[in-house]
Image (tube, rainbow over all chains, first blue to last red):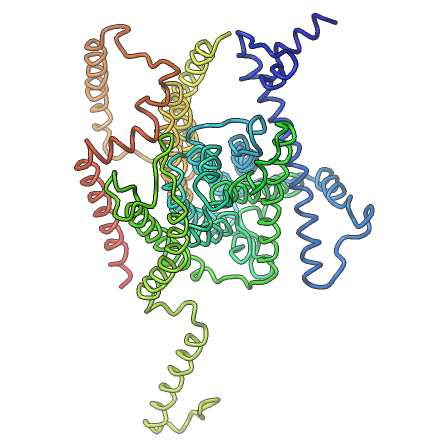
Length: 452
Length: 175
């Protein structure tokens, strides 16, 4: 019994050991680097996969709510077992591989997609202290890097299916994802200027000291939040940017030839990347697992548990917003989608970086050459004073947004893609001109149909 | 079992994967499989960067090469759609024999450089100093914007010119 306990303590995570024995052990390698991370990974994977299954349920319930219907009600109470039934259905469906498909790549592609979406979960700070699996000092870059590999899964799926629809679908969605990735990467740089670290836990810690009551950088970076959330919708192929599989207009995209559980793998990847983008937004802009008042909790275990709940609640709000958007806004046309990504989101992200940089440098402490001196140095970090907090909020909302709005409308003054009335008017005018020309020429053989 | 040993084991594993997939690039007939092997090489290279504590370079390696450039490679291969079982007929067979002197020169250079480096002279970074190491985001950022500002800006301008040039070339056909 004693031996078993010793072995258990040997592999137990540090915080458990400290809690039980109150003494430090020399060799912490197995417990800190192998056993405890594995436990965390298993927990996170199980929780996220369940969450993914229930997101499909939630999606149907939210759509039902918005359309004043009931949604799934038959399987279990309030249809709560619906995801289980769907899972079983997908598992026992026939797994078809087209004869002309490139078999190996066809089988691997959905796995690449899902793995890329799931690996990222390792660096997300699910809560304070021991609730974070890996606190890597390039956490945010790691997320961007791995999600850029996820595009490969779609490209390969489209190519290996050996079908026109799949190939075109893959081109459509990978072009979209590559474009929106840039906007996403640019939009978080403003917040990173304040945080001065790429570590996910570091960003959350920075927000507790830097922002108003630890609420988060969204108060300083309203434009960054806007660009990030828009780009995240495009990146995860959600409505109103769900061109990759616009079920009511097109043959479904890169996964046209997939069936059964392989098809479901793509959707699991999509839903887990929804969770990941929401988690990144919460971490970078909304204060992560912190909420004003959490510091009052003194019990460390309770503190961590509460932090996990707060993080989950913030993600849930964003996920609800995703679904809300889907049933509120009509789908963009493909050229509008690209236009929005390249001519609006990317310039807005760049302008946000420049303006945030200018405001940040102006507010530096006077000892470091700043004009206004709205910050003071503390433990090697620059922390805004009360006036500094007000200054950053005001510049974010009142100065940055109008400047960028003016800039973007100037850049895009000739673009007609969002002005549907003008587009229609253009056609009407062309037609009128043609008809008038015909009438002037006196070509009486053709009656002018429909013209004024 | 110590972190150092694990690091060594990881180095060996990823080095083997990198070399094996690099060989596979050459041995594959189908271009798409070659491209996939190249992705394998790039990913294991980035893991090797991690073992020398160059985290930023490792992440950038994946973002730029495995993510962006390989997607473009795959686009081109997909759209050209080279038949799998019919290798292209070589038009200039003589060029193939040029590969031998070039490879010889490359190997000679490698050995020359290796001879210059005395064994065990490479600075070993203590784990406690890992945050100050060369490969972190912080040190690269400071380096780029202080000592190497001019090369950095010149390279950016060069890339910008390349992008604008590509745009001009691509548009000329249409208009």
